[in-house]
Image (tube, one colour):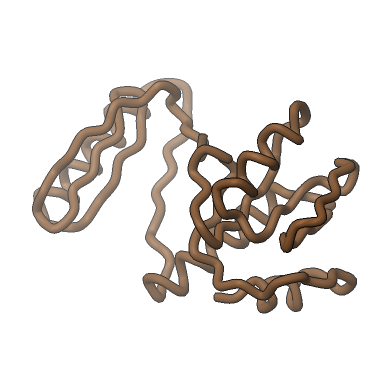
Length: 161
């Protein structure tokens, strides 16, 4: 996907300096690589993070319309009413381009039993050789191509950071 395709669909008054291929979308400046779209979603120290993203290869920066940032570099700056919505849409578009369809999601809510229920569902799907991912308070578990991995977690609801 090229950034122009996204901008043309979702923004009417944005002039792009460069129409680059979008290779990565992130809201964490530490994860930016060449041709990334960096979406600034925090409310402080924006110059530090934006400059870090540019130095690491971001070609498009999406910021809240209230953030006052300018650059003379060949970088697209898009001022948005809702950068988090842009993050969600761009990640979805990039995922669809790469895999052709969105994954099935199961969310579990309630006061008690979420960990038990999610673990039982994970185990049932894994035992039937489905590729499955469990994100929970006991860690993040991945069963893909008949191989299981465990990733430690800090928060029960991880962000991209």
